Amino acid sequence: MGINKDQVQGRVKEAAGKVQEVAGKTVGNPSQQAKGILKKAGGAAQAKFGDARETVEEHRKDADKRP
Image (cartoon, rainbow, N blue to C red; front, side):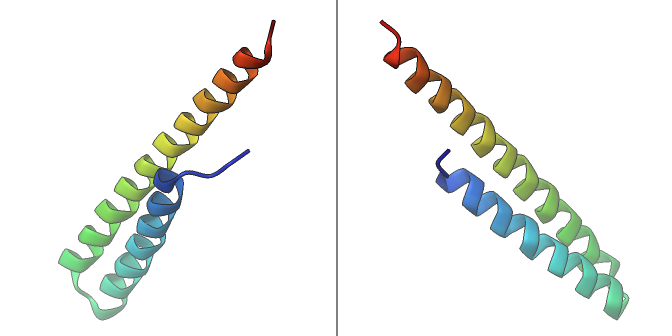
């Protein structure tokens, strides 16, 4: 199993969103908290897309190996 840029970037965005969400909650800034939640959700979606892309690629490689 490999890893692609969508998986990496998505998980980085997801982590950054979590940090922003917690920071917003800590300082009592609902706007920052909401931005963090959105960034986290977007990152999770991008990571899932990368996971799906990787699965398709693996299946394609397996199909190419068949006679």
